[in-house]
Each structure stands twice: as C-alpha cells, then as structure tokens.
Amino acid sequence: TRSTRPQRLLKAVQKRATRGDPQSVISAIDHFCRHSEWAMNVGDEKGSILDSVVSELNPEKVLELGTYCGYSTVRIARLLPPGARLITLEFNADYAAIARQVISWAGLEDKIQLVEGASEDWIPRMKEHFGIETFDFVFLDHWKDRYLPDTKLMEDCGLLRKGTVLLADNVICPGVPDYLEYVRNSLSYKSSYFKSHLEYTKAEDGLEKSVFLG
Ligand SMILES: O=C(NC/C=C/[C@H]1O[C@@H](n2cnc(C(F)(F)F)c2)[C@H](O)[C@@H]1O)c1cc([N+](=O)[O-])cc(O)c1O
Ligand SMILES: [Mg+2]
Image 1: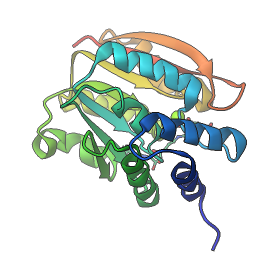
Image 2 (image 1 turned 90 degrees about the vertical axis):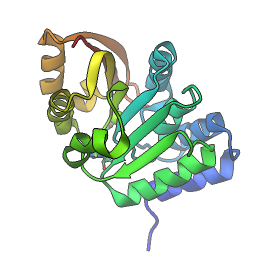
Image 3 (image 1 turned 120 degrees about the vertical axis):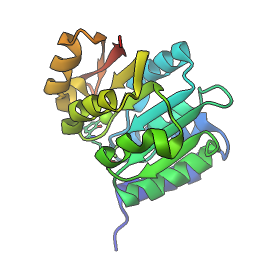
Image 4 (image 1 turned 135 degrees about the vertical axis):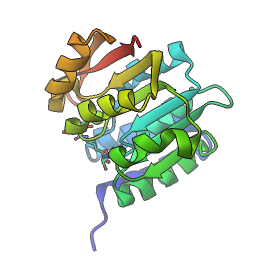
C-alpha cells in the first residue's frame, strides 16, 4: 500500500541528513517540504523565531504539545543546555513512530522524552510520573481547539511558574482565536505577537509568546 507523508519525510531525512547532525535533519525536512510535499512543521522562518526565544530563555524543563514528525522537537532540543529535558506529547502512534526515528537520526534521544497519549491524560500526571515541578518553556503546536483548555489545565495543575514562557504556533493560520483572546486579556500573562508566514508559503501566520506572571 502507498506510503504516508510522514514516512516519505523520514526517508528524505535518512537520505539527505547526516546521523547525529540536528541541523542537517532540519534542513532535510525543510527541503522536502519546499520541493516535494508540504507538511505542517513549524518550518524555517517561524523556526528561527522559535530558536531565538529558546536561546534567550535557556530552559531546563520544556514541554512540547504536538510532536508530529519531530521537526520542532529537534529544533528546540538542539539548543538545550546539557542536563535540560524536553517532554513532547503525541497522540497519533504512527506519527510518534516516525518522530522517534527522526529524533534518533538527529542524535538527540538523550534530551527528549516522547510520550504517546492525550494531553488531558498526561498533563495532570507530569509531576508524579516525570518528577516535573514546573516547566520553563511550553511550545503549543497540537490541535488548535486544545490550546486554551490545555493552557488552563497546566495552570490548574501548577505546572506554570512566574516567568514560564508559552509559545504558540499558528495563531493566525489556521488560527486559535479563543486562546489568543485569553492570553492577550488575562492579567496572568504578558503576551506578544511575532508576525511571520505559514510554513513554506506566503500566507500570513505568527507565533504568540506569552509569559505567565503567576
Ligand atoms: O492542524 C495543525 N496542527 C495540528 C497538529 C496536530 C498534531 O498534534 C498531535 N497531538 C494531538 N494532541 C496532542 C497532545 F499533545 F495533546 F497529546 C498531540 C496530533 O496527533 C498531531 O500530530 C496545523 C495546520 C496547519 N495548516 O496550515 O493547516 C499548519 C500548522 O503549523 C499546524 O500545526
Ligand atoms: Mg503548527
């Protein structure tokens, strides 16, 4: 039977990228998505903004919601200091299987823990299951109708501290209006918009950076 797009993306990584070289994995995926098949990775333009936010923050504890093929997982993990940890949640087992191989090809498995399941099941278990007190950085790139409920769930579970940074993808396209309204009007967040473009296209999109004020 016909292969899936994530399978073809992985093949492109294994063909073009060098094992243990995260930058070559990132470049191979961007090349595949520009020249072969579009895929919903954060991409190189928004990815550079993601890089600058992570580099400035130097987070020790990172949560990513929505692994997909592991593109942003690799982007973030390659910048983390030794000893820092990234937990990434993925609901789809097929995507998770591809992401594990992409992460392994980049040689970043020691910094990353990929967890399969639903956010509403795993967010309440972060403390007892992973020994996490609070997260320093959260990247939201999963189902757009889950950004707001999962943010409220992280608040309720005490996983955010004064200064925790939330960075949300796709706040224009496909858009997350309820989430944007919340973080921009809540007294618990200082929010700012980074205008960019939808990955590999000329359409407008952007990232919203929201600092939890406690
Ligand atoms: O729909 C988009 N993204 C949805 C992304 C969804 C991904 O997040 C996973 N997930 C679901 N729940 C969890 C968790 F964490 F809760 F367990 C993880 C899903 O299985 C999927 O791999 C999208 C669409 C466009 N677009 O242009 O249409 C562009 C983009 O950048 C996008 O991110
Ligand atoms: Mg996205």
